Image (cartoon, rainbow, N blue to C red; front, side, top):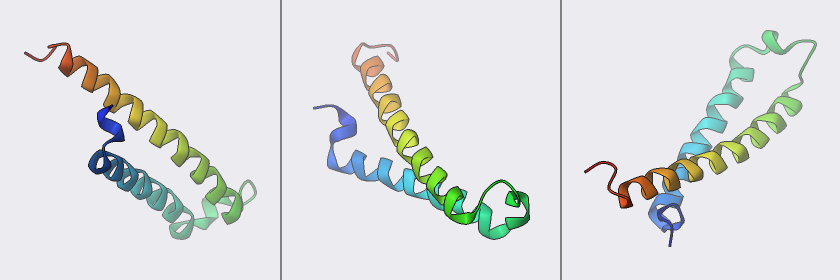
Length: 76
């Protein structure tokens, strides 16, 4: 089983993703003027959600990449 599918790793990746999304959503709350004319809060939140999905996929790929490298002895 790939390491990113282990419960503990899966939970950590989920926490990092949630933190990323929360931080990005806070940008709108902190300075809504920078979004005037090109994004509503609802649109911004939807974009952040989609980005979070991609972010999580990429984190999983990165963990898998390093798992393979460790198993191949690249860091010995």
